[in-house]
Length: 276
Image (tube, rainbow, N blue to C red; front, side, top):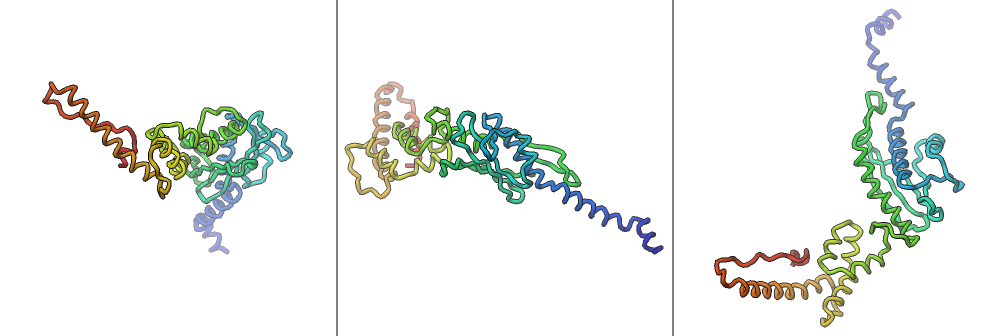
């Protein structure tokens, strides 16, 4: 007994005691869970600022703070609606992937419409020695990313569904995108394809290039084309080379008195020319 008391007095067990207390505090506070709770609460605030309203299970409007206090622990799911558009609610769901927090937004009525974004929690919330949260970082970047990937697409989808302009292309149906693409010259089509992944995928569709081919080269017949984009390039390249050569000849005649001037540099009209 004396040796035991002597050990405690000498601090031999202080390390074990500190580790036990740290584990106890961590278990009680659940800092990782708390981080996700805070992130989810912040994102709900961003949604609220952009005219989204939190709903109860009954469909009634819910108070955000009441919802956060009464919801089940480690449950990251909320139902929201864009103000005045109750008939098209959306689900905001958070998924725990270790240090990554995946946020998915979907409109059940439009089941194919869903958007997602991932956050590295440790990049935005800093904890101290015992797992207590003591600082936030890069919240502006997180909010901006969330708005671009979730809020704006969701709002645009809902407004477009109700036939209201949203001032944003995100959320437009594919067939509307197709009509817009077919109204643009090919250089603008290629520029537009670099604006986002979704539009890039739409522009790559073979049926789009089949219609562009028919539109721009009505005198050509390529009904058996296996790749309409390649077929378009095959016709487009000679026409551009011929046009550029004609421009050079005209410029030479216009400036023949200045024989020392070099040929004008070619200006590319579109990214298609860079690909040829």
